[in-house]
Image: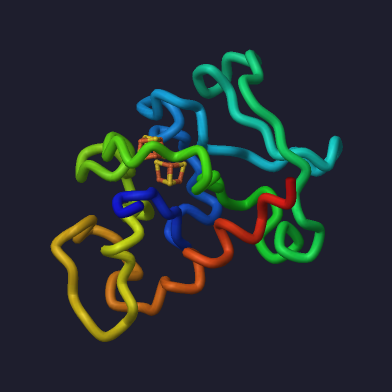
Length: 131
Ligand code: SF4
Ligand code: SF4
């Protein structure tokens, strides 16, 4: 399915969770290292947990809790989170517009890492969710 959201490296250590608040299906997750769980909230900071998943240990170890993760199996491609005015650092792309380092894209043109190869994050987003 096209239009699935992918979070890329500009989110690292930014994580302001603006995307969480616009996602209608709570499919954007944070990692809780203490519990070893990925969790999504009804609204960011609400403490109301909507969904949890056990992460794949090898893949969650790469970025840990420094970045958020979209569960691509739950994303409905609604487009809300990758509208240009949502993510302050332009970290979210639809999967068919993730920059591969070869082409420039009009999506999220404020991404400071624009032009870098972010395609790694497409596979990584799937690999993080083990269950
Ligand atoms: S809005 Fe952007 S920087 Fe903020 S948490 Fe979402 S992907 Fe990360
Ligand atoms: S495209 Fe829609 S459903 Fe998918 S992560 Fe973004 S806001 Fe959520």
